Image (tube, rainbow, N blue to C red; front, side, top):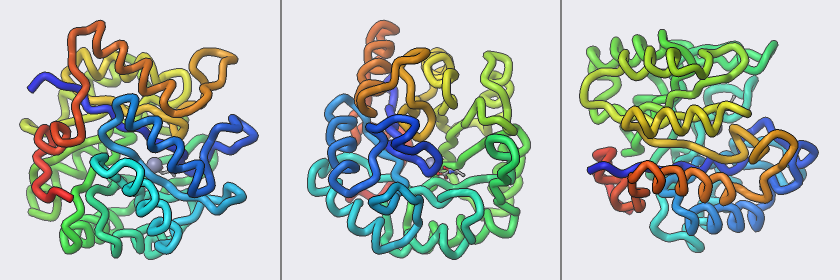
Length: 275
Ligand code: KMH
Ligand code: ZN
């Protein structure tokens, strides 16, 4: 099926309202952004949660509130929670959200310098614990890749039956400290993926649009949204996540690709559990 899955990463843990006042923090703002993004064509919503004042949190109680409110407003969309949280959070803190048995969750596959002097820590033991907890809770993992060695880690853990097929990757390119976002970088990543896997691409900042477009040309999927980028173009802040979704949906259309519905996305990724 030649369709493109659009993921909208609504808020992340790093950008603030000072960067762009439309970045959602409250439950009501998250629902507003979720509804607009899914109506514009996003099949998956990548969800971080914040306190009302914008502080990132991984509290299960806050996730429960946000997930329930979004599911009420957009019943079909695939909800993918973050187990990455923000740098400096403990693993226990990051994974308590899995108790809620979300349909999908991010699983970060290695340690990386993150945006300069922050370190985003994901040791092998941590990766194994996240993978095992997701399996126990029937949560479909999206494997987050910030550099090529992380794909090799996935392949190693797949051989040990810790990570099981279907393997779905998110290639995050353009993080300061991770792999770049040139066509050569992306080809290096995509050609290193195990056969039969699926992938989406997240480009950070000004790389969002170009990396997404390269992914479509390479047969992959795309992630857009405030977590990765707050500008539609240089000096022009987006009014909401849906602006990014609409723009990449138009590019899909120009390239004669259809945008996947949530049901089609589940089929493309081989997700067994339907909610
Ligand atoms: N906020 C980053 C440190 C994920 O969601 O799994 C990690 C992150 C990845 O956003
Ligand atoms: Zn995230």
